[in-house]
Length: 219
Image (tube, rainbow, N blue to C red; front, top):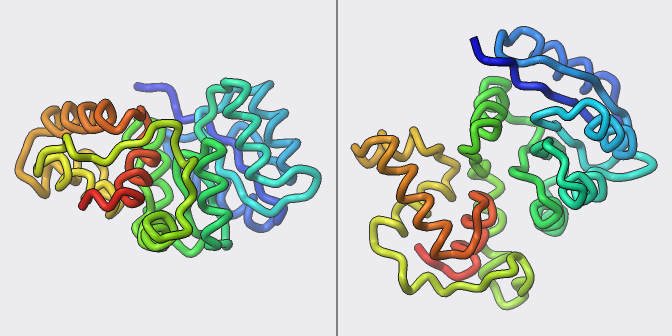
């Protein structure tokens, strides 16, 4: 049996922390190492406990979730950050993703979807919630789009039709397995094509690939 996914919950609301922990403790493949009520506490727990996943709120005292995420990324800590918040403000979404968050979820999503995202993120098959991707379309591809979402710039001219199709499905929030089922291809084929897409876009991150695709209107 594989080791359980090690998780830290960071939220300033005790009820939310306890609720999430109750849900996660029911899963055989997950274990909550600890909880934090501030971004500073979350960072300290990441340093001392080396979790696989951090469920990170945005608005917290002492240090907010965006700053904590940025420091986790800058220090090269093992934790992959999943933002879980009530705030769907475009600026906050972009700041969190730029800081290194792997995906951004709204707290009204079903618990089974949260569990699926945790498992997908842990395995490297990161997905972007469709509602969040849709909100970013206008923000990223419009005239006020920020120029520094990624260090690499790409027009996507070298992407094939199939690669653009896969990118579009990634933006819908589909995992590699879901894309394979949708396109009647093997999971290995999709995994290889996603790697090729990363190479052409100059990134190794699924969320950043989707952001670039939206920014450059690649589909």
